[in-house]
Length: 62
Image (cartoon, rainbow, N blue to C red; front, side, top):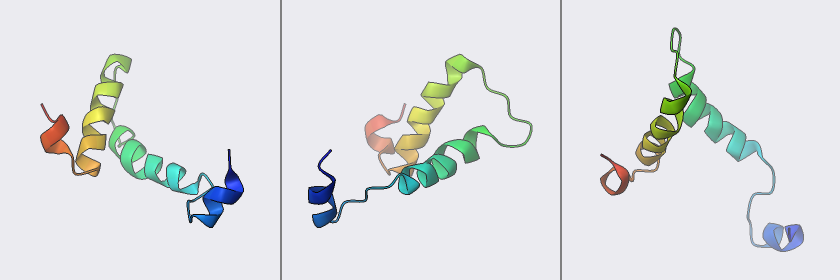
């Protein structure tokens, strides 16, 4: 990785943004009280959730 260049260009280096996004996008949807998910349903649900959170439903929606 070219961290000095990325920092100079203003790109974030730490993982805090990714961890925060995971909590907001994934955990809030999958870990609600009383929720249970079959493994086969997790990736399709995350793909839809990602489309919604990125305002790309028209591109990716069913």
